Image 1 (cartoon, rainbow, N blue to C red):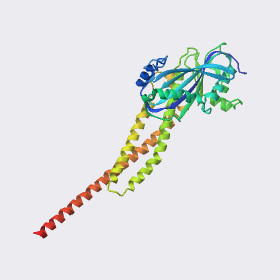
Image 2 (image 1 turned 180 degrees about the vertical axis):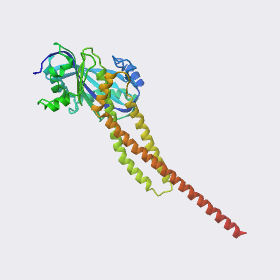
Image 3 (image 1 turned 90 degrees about the horizontal axis):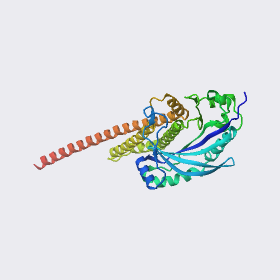
Image 4 (image 1 turned 135 degrees about the horizontal axis):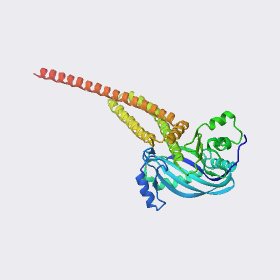
Length: 376
């Protein structure tokens, strides 16, 4: 059956860019600093259509509205709305919203690809740096241990609110060719690749649809609910943070091995102190990383909303968040074991030093007694 070419009546393309800008962000201070600049009011995020007891942010992030952008995509000019959502665990999620009205499905797919070329992960676009630099400067007092924001995650959403023609949602993927939009490929894909690409499909009502892939998603949502896109952003932010700490621990482990070897080979009488200092440093690192990763894990609390829980779980699996999280846990376990071994070694060296001191005292006592006997 040939695919239909419906007219997209109302839609939006959203380019997301998640960066780690600090170890932590004081969201209350962010709201105060933003209000002092007389910018559009900041708001605390919540899911629009889901009861808080069913699914909610652990610590509600702060959403800031930034100045609009003028973009040229596929030869057409667009004024894009821009916002950034700041998470307590140090992530900033920028979103560029490009509105679309009355265009063909092929043109909508082309717009997605053009947005990817301009703002996608391989574009190295200066747009994100232009948005981030003034934001960092304005909010610097609210950032704990600011980072250079070299690590990032990008995600692209194509959200349609209405087609001019009625299309059955249950078989929408059979009536409309979603593959070029979701893959970004111009050449035809194999049947196996097409099936794999369309595998993650979800619907709750009879008139909505979500199709997820690794770096893009298509959403048909006639009511304008933003819950699905919000949880996709959270999943990407969690992936970003877990990657950040995975790379941090990758860099720390070789240094740890060198420091441990140096501490073990120390021949001075204060070797126990050096080993104890190293153990405390490792314990502090484990405590800091564990605290932040727990905040990342609890960024979104899912309880009763089965549909959004399914979408969220599928996104975490698709983005491989759990695998990266498990890698972080394994490296933390190595550091914990090393800390325990160092602590035991430091205790042993202290005991040896104490025994040596006791022996010296005994010898001194004996020498003093002998000298007194001779003088008598």
